[in-house]
Image 1 (tube, rainbow, N blue to C red):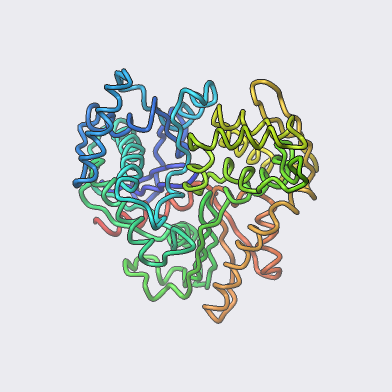
Image 2 (image 1 turned 90 degrees about the vertical axis):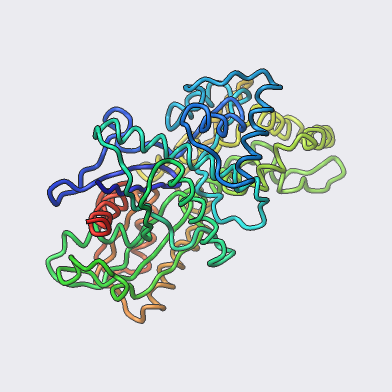
Length: 450
């Protein structure tokens, strides 16, 4: 049995084909989607968890060194790991929000794949994180289907990162392939996510068309101009149907970070000065919420940054605001701020105003935001997304007959309106925002492995 696996920035989901129809598979209760999040007692617990409880050995010398170091660290810190200490999805997030200081929490590790300049040990850490999530999804799926699974098609963006080109893409796909292999898959193929989403839409077409598929995920946006329709249904090789591709490392998470930075961080002292009249450096307010930038996160939460933050507070004109950065540092609250930014984005897609709330434990911040303020905040990343649509049209040399918009972030009315503004006279369709890619991957898997 072949599986379509959408290892998404925001969520993971899987599906397979049953008598010619896509059958999504519930992963947690009746929920077909599990958030791409993981929590553990510490970072080292993930490597030990895979080896001790999943029976998954490390790959290569760096992986072996990481496992030895992880076991030794846990032993020296007195951590006796149990199988349920590593959690996934909503369980992981709930545990993190209970006490951020006591939990190692990772959201959207896919966002870091393809980042060049990392040491081999860092790449091994990301591989373990992806492997842990994949094996959790695989075993949940096997439990539901009561079958062993060895064949899979995994979705991937056109480009994992804005910089690095094919070198970045090879590194990222290599991590995904090794992680899937270690998780127990034997036959592994990949398909571009926008192409997969297009395959699902194609199944509804009654005539051939040129379709622009716009896939706006949490971390990436991909656009593909494709020839689609009945004459292409049964073709395994779709190379000739692909007219143009464009993709960037920009998506829904970028909108959330922009909202947090432009609308929330003033409550933490952004745009204020020190007592000497000099502006407080911007990175103090960007780094804690830059959840896609591993170096920014490392800078902010580094041990030596604590003393720097205390000095910044002591010298600030508004110490009551800047002092909140210490609470963010001490309780690792960056993800909590981004979560509320996402809530704000969703709410303002349906209503004119929203009262954001950020719980700092010592106080509850109330931050009113209206739709106009949000649109101003997200203007730059939104232009980045719409420019990809324009790039695809230029590459293709033709306008599409229709647009198919998909991806978790694409459900935002603001994003759909932005697409319509670029192509005002072109009909726009959408299906299951979260499930179109998964369905297409399942269809492609059936062709690959029949």
